[in-house]
Amino acid sequence: MSTVAYITARGLLGRRRVLLLLPLPVLLVGLALICRAYDVPARQWGQPVVVGLGLAVMLPVIALIVGTAVLGSEVDDGTIVHILTKPLPRRDIIFAKLLVAAGVTTVTTAVPLFITGVLADSVRFGLALVAGAAVGALAYTALFLLLSLLTRRPVLLGLVYILVWEGLLGRFMTGTRVLSIQQYVIAITDKLAPTDMMAGKVSIPVAIVMSIVFAFGGTLYAINRLGSFSMAGETS
Amino acid sequence: MTATSLTAPTKGTTVSVVELQNVSRWYGNVVAVNDISMSLQPGVTGLLGPNGAGKTTVLHMMAGFLSPSRGSVTIDGSPTWRNPGIYRHLGLVAEREAVHGFLTAREFVTACAKMQKLPDPAAAAARALAMVEMTDAQDRRIETFSKGMRQRTRVAGALVHEPRVLLLDEPFNGMDPRQRMHMMQLLHTLGEQGHTILFSSHILEEVEQLSGLVQVIVAGRLAASGDYRRIRRLMTNRPHVFAVQSSDDRRLAVALIAEKSVSGVEIETTGLTVRASDYGSFTRALPRIALGEGIRLRKLLPSDESLESVFSYLLEA
Image 1: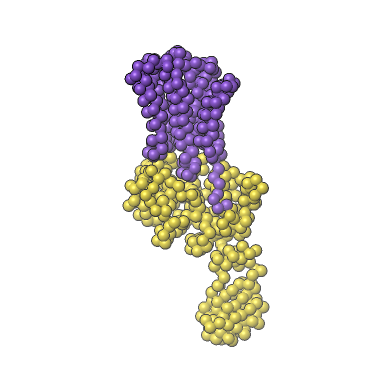
Image 2: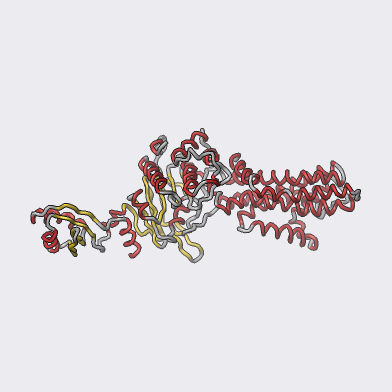
């Protein structure tokens, strides 16, 4: 498992793709710093920056980039064969990939969210955002990793989930929020550090149970799909 | 290090048999492989067929990367589909040449050894890289390699655990003649040591040089199986062609045309071309006739026993 995680991490962090992870965190912290520098009250910028940019855009987009890269890029270029032709339980391969994806996403998003949370409110709020980001990173990457095994266009489907399901439908159709990871992150963060910036639209039990469903369900299904991984012949 | 440093699979283990029983594979309405049964024994076997015949589909089913729509594919009795345990004894060199380019050859092969849970991954990797003559370039990133070097690195990765069964899909692609020769020698040695090796190719010369045993797939069906020279001899509906040279070609031609098993004789400047309807009868009759006529035979060569002839006959059939 450690070798798979090592190859995955090298592949993820050693390429230019890693540069894609930087702009959004820099933008998030930059905006927060500018607002603080100009003494703009946190109640004016906190909600749009922390929730609108941090939780609704940065967290899912980084999870999408990372979650689809850890397995999807290997499936696309065929290098996954070198890992699959080893006597490793498929469970171990998925766990290793998920560990790297969730870890990188958590680190990349939790640090700027913590800084922004401290600038907007308090250390407690910053830590609550870190916890929310960790839960969100796990649920999102499990979902996007699964998508990379279900479809050849995981990034497109992931964007549809983030922009259409969570971003658009989540605003107008309350029922869709039950299947929105963004809403779970908001609910958990708000529970840990209540502020007027967050307005949890799903209950805490729903947020916790559904986060587990996304993370475990996605992982179990991904293990099953990887076990049936098929290779189409190019000449047959 | 050369191919002689390889370990025979019989060291503490047994040889492996790959078996396909009534295997079919279809994609929607398209039948890619149709009711194929074959058994691969230790040694080198060539999987032959024109492009699109179903070779890669068969290899992928053997390697556990495709489920048969019908029938069973097993290695030593264990199904290959959804059974990662088979990779302890199986190595695969797929046709797609993708390798983790950001790793060096040594890192890649060592990672393969670690994932195989070998006791000394570094030593196993060094041995495998030496086998394919990649020791000098082992610390270069794979993305800087030529096609042939990548191919050899992939072979090293597939061989690092000394698998009893090795499947290779078009393994000589991109190799220069010297590398090709070395790879052939390596596979030949592995086969002699008791490894079960199957390689696909559409280049008849490669198969002819490497292996007498062939599995010929045409349009998804197994057209022939076994030693190709023997297959040729079993094609009794096609006359066998022999090149004959003797001390008196004209007199020998007259004598041969009276022989029942001979269907035609052509006299050429370099000797005779004899068409025989029955391989066995002709080869027994020729020395008797020559002796009776007092003619000395200088050359007797079956001229259509090449794999190319066998293959073209099978394609026409």
